[in-house]
Image (cartoon, rainbow, N blue to C red; front, side, top):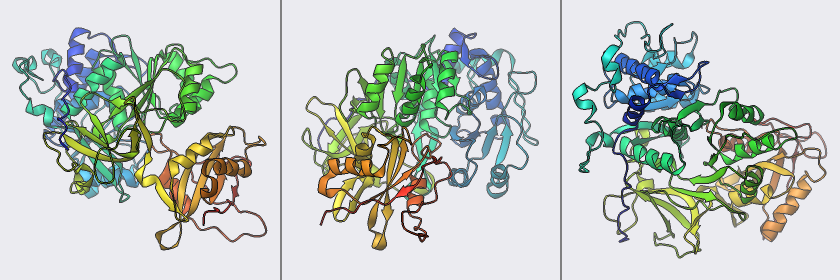
Length: 592
């Protein structure tokens, strides 16, 4: 492969926490973050960040080290994140709603010396007790002290004076002499600080243990510059933080407004999964930008188009990422919200994102993922790592100087996904996404499912995404997810489809109708499928369908039937059954 290296996109050359400082100096009284019953100004936010950085320095310093932050989205989380970065550490954000095995696995893998809370440690918190006892970690209270917006209270034994006064106007850890020189250089000379880690986020690994993915200050700052400029995020904009902490999407949603002088509007946890209440909150908060996943956008669309409901008039930009966007949903959003800019975003955590497409007209079955984001390229390669011709489906490989340098912790030795194609030269890094796609004749990229979502049933290779698309196209289906059912000798015995019907009582919301839809799509290759009707799909903290839970459910053996007719499987705890929820045996494929 002899293609020229990807041109490194031009950006400000400053880490994001320094960009926040720049806006605080220009407009200190502007509202930076909503919450806590009032808006928190840029001045107060950075005073709190300075205090957090002071606590970390007094506790021993964190330069070049990971710091865990376990807080709900809000002013406290924003201040803690800025404080960690200003002190020279890198972020590990934990989802407060998850205190079980995943959080333990993440902490054990990265082993941060400090874990920050927004208040005193609650009694009986098993995760914090384990962190202290098993890992020897220190828990710090990074919340403001009573009556003060600037004084965090360190946990017993940590000490810590709080910086106040004139130097509160500096980035924490800087001196007046170095403040103006911080960040990039006008002559383009590289700043080594930009190549340090900004954060580590964890995604599900193929081994069943979370995999640590770091990103540099340079990579994240470049992306933020493009993101804020492209989607017109600046003073007057109000950006929702919908994604749960622990995901890079949450950091994007937090820093996009703060680095551009806009206002961050964290979604209250109790509203995040409720589309009706979230729609009302978006309107009352005057939110202009919302990023979410397509499956939740579908529920939100139903809420804002229900009788008597009103779409949020302030919303100007809806960004969808993390799942495939169907043409049917895109057309529905554009019909209901014609003034809203609708954007389809694509990319792995290893590159933050990689491609984008603005939906401006009626789409077909597949909404394109579009064109590469500046500073990135996407290759479509065949099984021998040769470029595919336009129209041919191949493996999607991201090429960019902003691809993560590699994994951390137990996965640090896993370099298979970063293997460059033969003949690749230059400074670019490569990431093999595991996704399949093609480039159309007009240069747009299309997503065609996951390589690891391909299964072979009765000798026929199927893409689970195609089965889901066929079912989702049926008028009675609101949402669905399909997983493989394991059989003997590591073979796939069949497929299990979990269906959320639009109206469970409708006459066409039946297994017979769904089987017919699959027959029309796959013909003789129709696989054996079982159907389970649920009120909603289980979700991960990131809002995606929880396929791990569904796969575990599908692997549970059928109990002996008490009599003729199908029996119901146990349902995942997060799945809400409908009154008619029941499993139906699927037909056998006619494929020989």
